[in-house]
Image 1 (cartoon, rainbow, N blue to C red):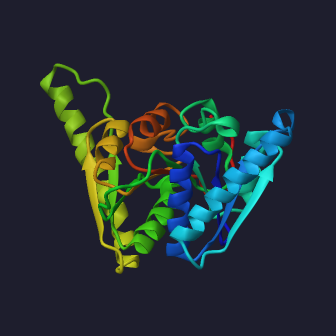
Image 2 (cartoon, helix red, strand yellow; image 1 turned 180 degrees about the vertical axis):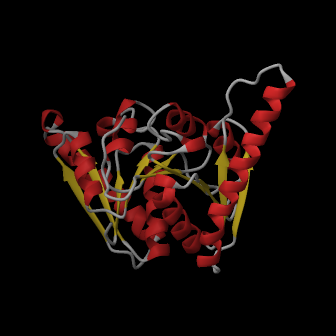
Length: 280
């Protein structure tokens, strides 16, 4: 990661919400902001080039107005979209995108391109649906240990910067329940053991970050449902791009697709240490 946030701009309302979120984050964390628009060569003509430049400059003006003092740079890229965004992520603290786009970002994030980007970006990818109107003072992170360590670190940085509390959620999805009481008891005991282990994993994070109020909860339910419900009272939901336990393959499979579709607040997808990886 570097001291720069990159935001994709395409003129759509969600992309402008992404610019606003990125500007606020850059201001809070004393980072530079880079705004990029992908205008592929096949789509370029004199009118298109002028439109793209004006749209990008309008976004920059908006960012500067919201975050005075933040260094804001802009660039029009030649595409392809996916390759350009992956390249941008390699030199970024994070990559911020709107949940739906126009032009170069058509279908971004809620379609196949988004899942591929979440699986290959070298930096956290933040997906913004719409401009926030209410502040909850809470960051939520889906945590199961393992490769979600990076997600926990990013969530802590966001909680600290936003002066918000951090809610650590562990979701355990049990097998289909048997009608037999013995089987039910075994599953119940399994959840209790997993819940205790998950709670214990949070203790070192709490002790090592006394300046952040860290809460934790363990829920026996589908991870998508848990994170979707938590998003209604959160300013940001953070997940790892790959998970273990209750968040297995989080953000690259059905869980990722469900969270991106149903979360009502921005979602950050954080890759494991080492950056980009192969989607599975």
